[in-house]
Every structure is written in structure tokens, then in C-alpha cells.
Amino acid sequence: MDDSRTKKITIVGGGIIGCLVALQFQKKKYDVTIIEQKKNLGGILRDFQIENDFFFKGCQYLENDIKWIDQLKSLIHEEFVNFKFNYASHNSFNKDILIKKNLAVPIFKLNDLTEEEFNFKYSEKETLYDRVLFYPKDIKKKLISFLKNCGINPKIIHSSCAENLQISRVNVDNFEKYIISLKEKNNFYDERLAVPRNKIYPNDLCYSLPINGYSSLFDSIYKAFKKIGIKIELNTNVEPIWVNQKLSLKYKGKIFDDTFVFWSGNPTKLIFNYNKKKLNSHVFKTFQISANILTNNKENFFLQNFSDRSKILRIQKYFSKNNDKIGIEFLSTVQTKNFIINEALEILKNLNLDIKILDSSLTKYVLPRFDIFTVFDQKIISNFQNETYNSNLLFSPWLIYGRKNKIRHIDNFLNTKKFY
Image (cartoon, rainbow, N blue to C red; front, side, top):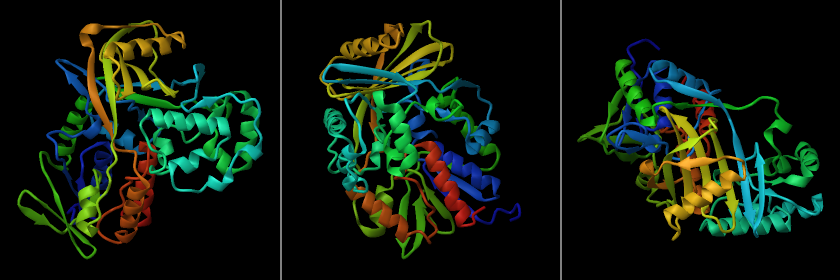
């Protein structure tokens, strides 16, 4: 293809995935347009802003082994802090506490563990509840109590959302050698049981964070994209128009029907305009408390919390722009902000981490999640993707969790369809 850029692609949604896809098509000489409903690029990654300070939304590390991300970094002038992946799992069920580093999944201790205790009858069923029934009785009971504490009905949620909730695998602390042998024996075991990463892989995972925050990062992306000819339409609503297998886009009073489309955002309207089927659009509502902190520990880390009573889901400690910071993600609760903070600090003390909250920076935000979907929605989205596979709408990984997995699936699709 020559530099005339006769082929066009429109990216609907200016978050991290939309921007990464836009850059790939720009490199392949496509005429690229990004349409973003909000006033800035960045989507859910844009920071919580408080006066001249900022805090990350959730635990959003950038993988250092993804080519697409490296290409994006090389295009902009932003400083990143690189670090080894440090993480831990904190578990409290029936007042028993288990803690382990190099794991971010539920941890259990059992008196005995044999193959007969796993129920393969439920290994390929659809719901999250079915997936939980695969495990031995005590593990199953505690996972169900965790989901109940989260306000999640596992009988309507799709089984693949186990990964989104960090319960796709579990660890049995006192049977790790046996677990390794099971993982080597059977793929079902491998996908459902876990041991610390360092017991299987010799290398550490490495990640990075933008030192000046994600909002600054996306502002730099905006400027860089404009320089290389990627068109960006902010504050713009788009209406999808389907005629048979042809998707056109209407925005700013005009209809555009000569473009490929990558729909990175919420697909509810896109699907409804195609077949009049409405998604449940299940929202998993969480909150986040953020603050600057004082601590002697300078490492970035996150801790996943699993409990039948604690409302804390995750604690992240990170360094950015001359300050150590903390983010505490938790469920809707009548408990006070101070109660949540004190509980988080007690959890961190179990890892020998002493942290002091700087009250002047303390702030609380709603952090809704749209990555938990029902079996009903999964069927609608999957059927829609199959029916539109040969249209000008490109595959979008709405049902896939994790940035790395999303990018791999998009790249495979584009190579299969010979867009490159």
C-alpha cells in the first residue's frame, strides 16, 4: 500500500486499546480516525485528579513485554518507572488468615487433597457457579461465600469472569508439590490450580507506570498522534447504522460508510442497532480510597484480598511524581472511610509493611467495573461477533480479560484477515 492512505479505519473509543490499535493501522498506511465521547483520550485509565495531584484508578500496570506498548512509548516524551512485579494474596475466611507472596489468587489449606475431590462434571459448564463446583467442598464453600460478600450472583455470571475476579485459579498451600503434578497432568487442573510463579518460571515479570500519571500520558499521545496524521474527534457521539452486513457511522451530522471500524468502547448500542437485542450490561460497582503516604518500602506492589466479610478487594502501593501513594479498592459498604483505611493498614502489617496515610491528600471515588458479564450477555456478544465476522467491523475483545490477552487476540484477528 502506498502513502496515499486510501484505506480507512475508524476507532470508536480512545482508551488504551483504541490508541494501540490506531497506531498499528497508522504504521500500515491507513487513514486513521479516533472518535472519543469524552473531552480527552484515556478512558478508564485517566487519573483521579485532586488539585495539582493525581491518583491511579485501580491497579493498571503497563506490561514491558508487549511490542505494541513499546511502540507507543517510543512515540511520546513521557518518563516511566520500571519495576519487578511484586504481589501477594491475603485471605480471611472464618477468621483464619493466610498470606502468601507471588500469588494473587485465593489460598486455602486442606487436610487432604486427592483427584477424587474434583468434580469434572462441572468443568465445561457456562456459569461462574458451575466453575466453582469443580473444586473440593471446603474450597467451593469459601469461594461462594467470597462471591456472596462481593454481591455477585455466580449462577448468572459467565464462568470466564473468574479471571476478572482473580479466582480463575486457587492455591492449596500445603499441597503445592501435588498441585504441580496435577497441572502437568491435565489442562483442566492447570487452568484452575495455582502455585507461586517462581516455582514454575525462572524469570520475573516486569512492568512500568507513567511517572506523571496516565492523564499526562494520554495528553502526550494526543499530541503525538496529531503530528503523525491520526485524526481525533473528541466530545463526539457516534451512531452505528447497519445495512445488512455493512456498518456506517454517523457523527457530527455526517454519515461515513467507507471505513473499517474498530469499536473499542461499550458495544451495547452497536449490537442493539444490529439486531435489537439489549445487553444486561452488568455493573460491578466498587470504590477506591487514595492518598499520599509515608513508608520506608519503595517498591511498587499490589495485594489481592479474599474474604467472606472484609469489603476490601485490592490494595496498591506505587510511586509516582515524587510521592509514594496508596489505592484501596473496596466494595459498597456502610463502613466508614476510616474503618476501611484502618483495616487496610492492618492487612499490610501482616506483610510487615508500615505505612502512614497523609490525611490532607485523602480522597474517595466510585470505581465502576464493566468487565463482569452475564451468561445472557456472553451469548448475545458471541453470536453478534460470529454474525459480523465478515463485515467491515473488526473483532473487538469485549469478552476477554487483560490487556495482554486483548492485544494478542486483536493481532491474531488482523493477521488472519490479512489487514497487515
